[in-house]
Amino acid sequence: MRFPEELLLLLHVDESGYFLPIPPWKMSFALAGGVLMELSLENRIDSDLESIMLTDPTPTGDEMLDPALEEIARSEQVHSPEYWVERIAQHGEEIIDTAIDRLVARGIFESDEAGYWSLAHKVTRTGRYPLVDGWAGEEIKGRIFRVLFDDEIPEPRDVAIIGLVHYCDGFRAMLDADEYELAETNIELYSGMDLIARAIALAVRSSRPLRRRSRLTKRIPDVSLLDLLRTRQARTGNLPALFAELADEHGPVFQLRVPFAKPFIFLAGPQINHWVNRHGRMYLRARDYFADFEKVYGAAGVLPALDGTDHFRLRKAMAPAYSRRRLQSQADDLFGHIRGYMADWKVGESYPARHMCRRMINAQISPMSVSVDSQDIFVVLLEYKVRALIVFMLQLLHAFTLKSPGMKRRA
Image 1: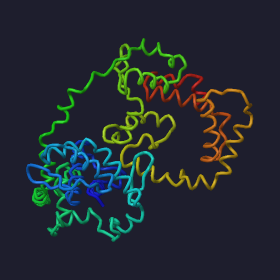
Image 2: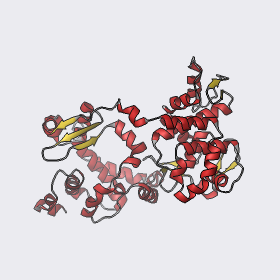
Image 3: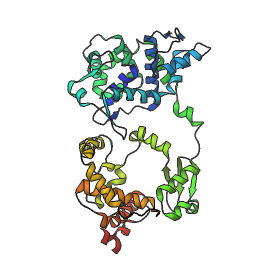
Image 4: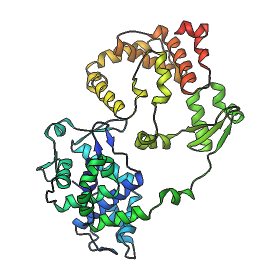
């Protein structure tokens, strides 16, 4: 198991399905240091306080290490460990992706399509992680904590891991104030023993990511109400297509200026989806926006309204009911609902995709999840839901519009 994998295991929080809230740039520095440590153990590089020297350019055959080795080999100059930490840290997301994919492939992590990872049941039950050579290694958190709190003599790899975690502020996020004070002496002692870990410390101290990137920032583009009304999709009423069109024209972040109201800031497009999937739980929350929407349905704690640990726990609780395995056992019923919905289609005719897809999905989900065929009232349900979303989520209409005679009938 490589250092980046062990680092992610140590920083993983099984209750929330994600990692400790560490700034991404610090995490990238720690992962870069882990890659350099592995190259040193593989005898590909040698390092001292002032430089990293290439000793063997032969690829290791490891897709996590070889890109960094190739970059060091291409360099015509000898650079400091701090330089290479900052350089390799630019590929931090690729290193995370590779490390997580390996942990999933080994059966240590179980992945979730929404970007959550949990320890596989067999690992949680035994409290042990299978290491790369096949023998059952001790759980890394227990191993490191024994070094920090019980003064157990650490192995060289444990010293390196302690340095990686310390200099990305992992221990401060992992331990409460009293625990950190108790372990601080050992943390400082062992973190200073590894040259590359000290290079991470220098890189963290000298780096000013907010100031460094401020020169690259751009002013958020403004979209006026008139610009909005001029778009083709505004006339069709297709809001997702409207925001996609605006994102194509103005970029993934733009703000809509409406008279007599604060500007609305929109995040849209595939880049934003990727960012939200990876980092959104650290910066965004949903609870504030869903509170009144939940009340409309007399509900509390619906999945999209929950954040953090509560969201992850509910996902895990609901997963068996929505699993592929359960659906496979009901495949005949599923295809029967689809064929029933398509029975009156005629060759050569065209159907509006959004309306058709919504009704087709409802023809499957409604009978299979609540044993009720709701196609006859589906349009009414949808109209009421869309109005509630516009009122409470987008806040474009006043709440009294949900109490009109038409909406009361739908309710």
